[in-house]
Image (cartoon, rainbow, N blue to C red; front, top):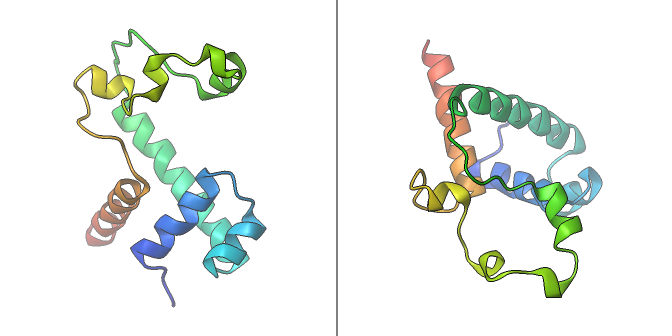
Length: 119
């Protein structure tokens, strides 16, 4: 059975995160449509499991809601200096030291797959 490399997985996930459709992701990456759909299901399940395990008892003082962001900050005059900073609430709280990247997600996903195979 053929498997996508970490780089291929990251490229597919990046395209989808950026808002590309499944068909355009297929064209850009050269990965089969069925494989892209399977990858969406697998990474979605991994992310849901990860969030269920890790996001517990959070003491949130600020929350970013991306869907509201596009409406509230739709006009340039509403963009604050905070928007231009490359930081997240987790970084401001000292929980994270860098912005998360798709490669980090793929690495964590593959590590979990290896643990499941070993068990």
